[in-house]
Image (cartoon, rainbow, N blue to C red; front, top):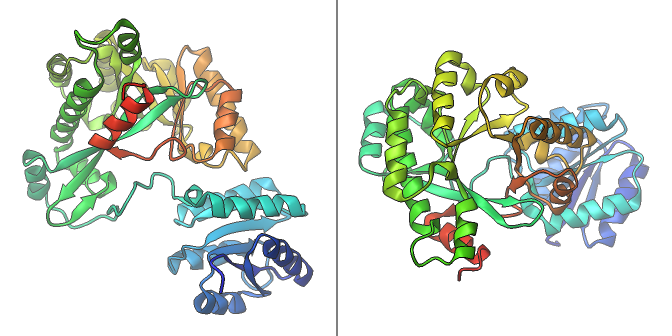
Length: 412
């Protein structure tokens, strides 16, 4: 049995044989099934590394098959094929991703042998491209767990929160633009937990302000210690460092903290970080929770020199309204569009429109979730300002991020 095993589900025997022949030409072992029952029997017995799945089947359609694959926690990378049109194919791919399935790509019928061959080769050479959006590196708990308010409050007090840092790069030059700080909880009892496991608890129980202050403190002091110019820094290096930014996520529940601005200004002073080097990221839906409080605090942040980014743009119900009424300086294209850009013309159209809209309003545009070279090249073509994603770097622990950043600045 070879390491590359492709299980094909297509009710047309001729298409199944064609896919199989192309797959064999790039050293895949193949099995062809014509119905869902045989497919799932082979899935259990053969354990394929890859799946080619037709959407339109007489007994069980492709979406139903993918739902069942998700229930079985299938890790095989999936190629979805059909003649139903690109919009339906893209919707099926998004559905699969939402179920946590790794998608290798979509293939519109009729397809050319060359297109399928390239997709199969890419599926093997870029296995990380199927990572679910937002997946952190390593083993990271994301499921809600039975955490008490007292336990999490103690975790903040005991400095159990940790940060990882994901680089942001300038699309045009490839130069380092800055970092985004992402919080984790390293619980002695539960292991390393992702934000989704504890932030809802923090927000609903009055702990988010305390947590955000701890994140701000850690992020600014890490950034200040590693990337701020001092008296020994030459003029050229100083100019590079002064352009770097530190991005920190801000919860809507922090917007009614009247002392928050004074706190972060003081932390900037202690860390030696200019306020103009700090970007606070706020989702568009968060900004709508209390529009008046949002407008007041965000305006004051801008007056102090901080930058503001509207995160996950294009996924909320009030995107245009937020851009007009709030003083943002950056717009971040939601990763759901970016991660499908290499295979979806619709996603590329949306990205292009968001970047152009941002530029027309004087905002910088950042694309997050960049996982392949084709997407990065597209972003360069449409003059997107910055990018971040697994193609450039996964989120890194503090020492790794420092070494990575200094290397890319040519300082080591």
